[in-house]
Amino acid sequence: MVTSLHQCDLGHLSDLPTVRGLDDADLAAWVRANDYTDLTTHLAEIDGHVFPAHIKMLTTILG
Image 1 (cartoon, rainbow, N blue to C red):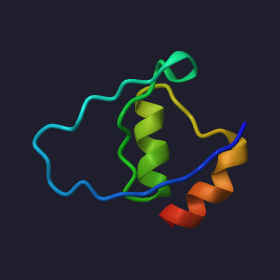
Image 2: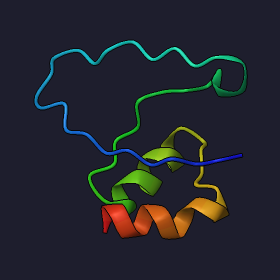
Image 3: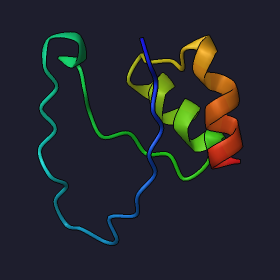
Image 4: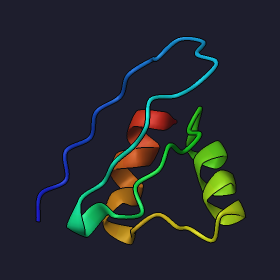
C-alpha cells in the first residue's frame, strides 16, 4: 500500500463535487481538515479515525 498526500483549496463552493470511491474506498467522503484538530474532531463525529501510520504525515501538513 502506498499513501500519497495531496492538499488543495477548492475555495468557497456551495456544493462539493461528488466523491465516488471504488472497492477499497467505498466509504470515501469529504472531510473537513483546516488543521489536524479539526480533522480528528470531524472524524470523531462520523465515527472515523486517522490510521496510526498517517498521523505524522497529517500533523506535518496540517499543523
